[in-house]
Each structure stands twice: as structure tokens, then as C-alpha cells.
Image (cartoon, rainbow, N blue to C red; front, side):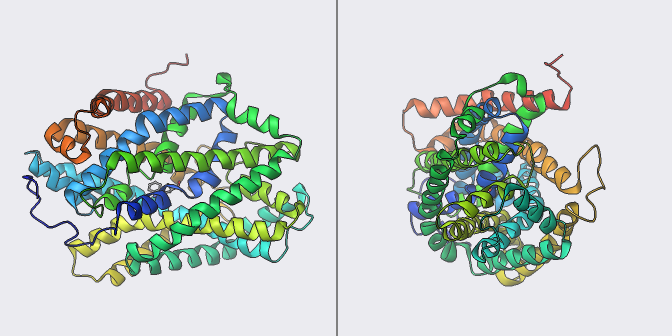
Length: 462
Ligand code: TRP
């Protein structure tokens, strides 16, 4: 062991990944999810396309990747649940244990995200059933849209499917993350990629592929607002599962000899490729069917079924696609609750199973708010936002960027460069200096500027 104060053996409490590859699978499983295939296309549609995508890519590169490195580093050094790891590192650095609040804040964000995540994952699972039973064969855009409206309008259906997802997730987490997860991700990732390529192939034949590509990749900055920039930043955090303790917790199970930089870069690339492919599949379908790119959270559910209803073997492709989407969602949902469960196990005398039951029930109760946002409470809005919209905004656009800011500050200014150098093991490579400069100055400044600009304290627009 090195001369740090890590007195516990790695994996003493929670176990370790079997290899670096297992960590990459799990981290990719966490990152790739509804955020890539459901959320990225609809927020891109709502924020005008190309310019938004460009800003999003910048955020991934400039902020997402460096912060992801920070989180994995803290986790691996601390070997505990988020708050405990941060506390141990703060103590090692001679700083106040209050820094552990970063961990708390992240666990809370993850919990809140999960309360809506399970509901949307429920849609994906329901759509496996709908496509498999041929519900969309030959359906027009209008019919598919009406079907989606009726489905989300029925609270009991959303509740049933959401509950199913939640129970499934908690069973996996209860059995320990390592076992089920590795296997699920191993076949899900190539499958997802293959099916997305099929969808892009379909999109190429819609006659509107060029239009879709232009929308995605030709920046029109007049379409982008200050708020849109914040949404792009928030989504960079969301899609990489940052600032919620998820990656930090997974880092805690990472073997000492694994390369943090290499694994992190791989995860970020895989995540970005999936999101862009989803966009390339969806927007041509939007335009060729006269749909609205800014249609909102239902976007993939009102576009993709049209394609499945029309293409050869659409029932099979559709069923497979929504199955993959459901799996991708579940491997992400696992990472949203794992930090809370890890903490309960560490801190109380509860067994892993009991800890899962308690967290699961809590998530279920709060998920009702999102379920009702699409039906009974759809008229109940605060400045145009339903409960779901508000929860999404609060978590992705406020809590995650702020949490990320503190992760940066803690890693850059509290931890010694000796510790970070040792963990990243980059030797004399300039990559270390670039990373350090980024998390010391660039990323915090960018987060603050985007944030303050969007809330209107600094208004560069006027
Ligand atoms: N990244 C996942 C997605 O894009 C969602 C997710 C998993 C997440 N864990 C997270 C988002 C932690 C924020 C924080 O679907």
C-alpha cells in the first residue's frame, strides 16, 4: 500500500469490481440511459438544435470529463459511500469534515432524480409490451401521438409500470450491484448500438435525413437562450451521472491499478455516441411526419413507434429497441439508488435488503408526484412547470451543476496535488496539468457564469 492514510483494505466493506473492464461496463451502464435516448433528443428539440448540441459537447469535454475524473478519484481513494469518502479525504488533507455535505447533496439529487426516472423507465417497459403486441403496426403519426396521450393520461397505468421498474431495480440492488450489472451491460451496450444503427438506417430513408442532420449539427445561435445553455450544462452532468455520488460510489469499487483517465474517457465517448445516434434517428422521423421537435418529454414515444409501425420487421426491431432502452434505464436507475443504499448499509445495522426496501418505498411515494404530473395534476403548474418539469429543472439544472462545482473546488483546492497525482497516475504527462488547470479555473468559472447568467444575475443577453 502507498503511504496515504487509507487504513482499510480496498473493498473491505463493499467489495470490488472484478476488473477495470467491469468498472467500465458499470460506469457506462450508469451513464447511458434515458438521458441519452429520451432526454437528449427532446431537450435538443426544445432548445433549437445545433447550437445547443455544440454547447452540450463543449460541456462534456470541458466540464463533464474532468469532473468525472474527480469523482472516480475521490471514490477510489475514499473507498466508501460518497459522504464518507469525501469526509475521509478531507481529514487526510487536514480540512473540515463538513465537506462531506457534497456527498449528502449528491445522494439527495440522485434520490430525487430516481423518483421521476422510474416513471419514465416505466414508459419504456410499457412500450416493449405495446410494440410486441403489434399496437403500432401501420399507425400514423397522429394515432401514435393520441395513443401516447391516452397512455400518460392514465395514472394507474403509469403507476403500475413505474412500480414494476422500481421493484426490478431494488431486487438487483438488493443482490449487490456487481453480479447482475456486469452481465446486463455486457450484452446491452452492443445491442443498443446495433439497434440505434438500424434506426439511423431507417431515418436515412425518410427523405428528411439531411433536414434532421442540419437541425442537429448546424448551429444557429439565435435559437439558443441563456437558459438553454444552462440546460445543456445540466444535461452534461445528468448524462454522465455526475454530482450525485453515483460515479463516486462506483469509483470506490475500482481496483487500485486501473487507469482512471482512460476509463473515464471511454465512458464519455460511449455516452456521447449513443446520444448523437439517438438524435440522428429521431429528428428525420420528426420532420418527415410533420411533428414538432419541441414536443417535450414524449418525443421518442411519438416518433419511434411510427418508424417501427412502417419498417419491415418493425415489430421485432421495436420490441428489441424498447427492451434495450428499458435495460439501459435500469442499469442507470441502479446507480441512482446505490449511493443511498451503500450509505444505509454503512451507517446502520440494516441489511442490504432492508436498506433497499426502505429506499424503494421512499422513492415510490415521491414518484407519485411525477405520475400525476401527466394526468391529474397536469394543470397544476408553477410558472408553466408541472411537478415533473420542476423536479427535472431543480435536479438537472440547479443541483447537479452546483454539486459539480463543489466537487471541482474540493478536488482542486482542498486535496493535495500529491494525492490527485498519485490517484490519476499520469506521471509527468501534460494531461495532468491540463486537468488540474481545468478543475481549478475553467470548469468552476464556466459553471458559475452559465448558472448566474441563466438565473439572470449576470445578464449577457441584454
Ligand atoms: N446518466 C443516466 C442517463 O443519462 C442517468 C443517471 C444515472 C444519472 N445516474 C445518475 C443522472 C446520477 C444524474 C445523476 O440516463
